[in-house]
Length: 311
Ligand code: HEM
Image (cartoon, rainbow, N blue to C red):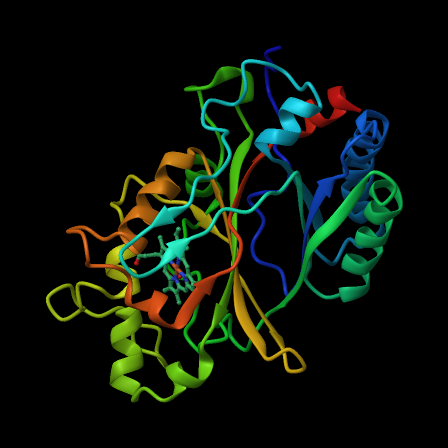
């Protein structure tokens, strides 16, 4: 079905200060259709309700659906053109692992962490009988928008409504899914001890940016294997990154929840290939020497119109 003026889910929102990420996988041998219908209606309900109840805040709930779940739920075919099971990207030293994910939830609130908790609890009430929550990460804004490694994260993102929509939403190349978005996530754990043992110039060389000022190094100074040199695949290929740091002293897990929305998944693949394999091969991203990807899953975020139909 073609929607004339599709309304995206809130994928273009800015980071938020409090974020809760959840991945749910359906149980085997249960009928999941009714719960899925309810969850689609709930996502719409939660967003509308937040608009009315918390007008000074900016909170939202975005749901993405994985490839296997799309097939199991018998959602429309042909599928979104680039929706697939994410395949690992293995370089000589580091690997972007692939892990299963049926439904992904990205819950955000600027001021009130309680809103994220309530949204997660409502989702859990519906899904718990038919699915298992396999990942739950509570992200927080760290100082002036820094990753847990101490560098500002998000500066070179597309800015402004027009640019964000261009790079973040499916366009006319896939008319049936226009206004949708590819959502790719990875949970990274950092070796903070090793990173902190580097001198300031060595840390800055990892990112190709200055730590305190967040100013990018000129191209002729920036190391070829720095994160900003490697992850940049050209001005025509950008994605919207909404990464959030997380930290748990008890389990000693400090990390980055990498999350990106994109008009095409191929753009993200280009970035991953350059980071993990390298161009030329072997010029992998220095950031990976301090970061291990523990998960990796691709989802498709349908428009609100599609969620309404599914419900
Ligand atoms: C290991 C976890 C990661 C951390 C802590 C991290 C952090 C950062 C930081 C601090 C910057 C510089 C400021 C900015 O422009 O945002 C940056 C840039 C960027 N990152 Fe990452 N990142 C991570 C993983 C990834 C991954 C997996 C991708 C893509 C698949 C990616 C894509 C990008 C891109 C495209 C840029 C902008 C490069 C430019 O044009 O200068 N990052 N990241």
